[in-house]
Image (cartoon, rainbow, N blue to C red; front, top):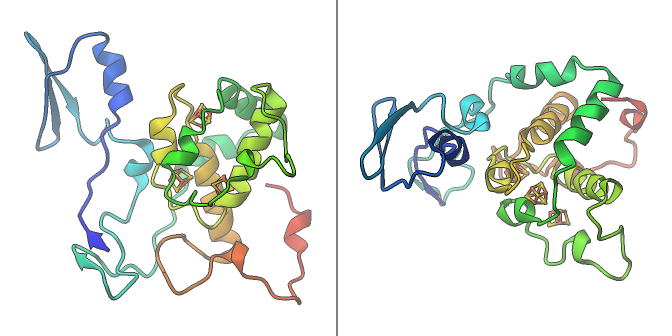
Length: 222
Ligand code: SF4
Ligand code: SF4
Ligand code: SF4
């Protein structure tokens, strides 16, 4: 593993949105300024505000030294300070409001699967969405099929998602999947005291169970 320090990935779509149809010819960073230039114009954006939302709360600015083969700027990270204030607003909603929020957010999904393709943890040889025998769910872009795709993928990401934000960054219709991934991250942290990506030796909770597990969690609601 080769480690590089990272101060956050610039949210290109947000900058594109503000610049409109003008052609960008040059981008540079100086201090806290992102300097974007075109033929006859120049615009500055504050770096700390125009990085991806997950980068704003990321506390692992260099890869953790999870293996002996890490070279470069890898750091020892035992645990991270858990700040989930970015999802407080969502969590304060009622069940009905949460449903409305999720429905509204996911309805534009075209099921292009760019989120899956960009995800470093979606590495299955054959994804459930591509299986024909059995067909797990419909292939349409009607909302029930969209929901099942995101629901099953969320199950698969629990305890695996490293909150890199790639899935949201690549979505061509601008769906913010961070809400789902951050909520998953919090549930796994609270229930299993596990943060994905920090320790290569410990099995993620969903890959590890004991026959004497009480399974009470199945009855609880989040
Ligand atoms: S990238 Fe966006 S549109 Fe494509 S499947 Fe994922 S959420 Fe849906
Ligand atoms: S945020 Fe999580 S689900 Fe999204 S691409 Fe990164 S690891 Fe995958
Ligand atoms: S969505 Fe699930 S089955 Fe598909 S590649 Fe990702 S982890 Fe594998």
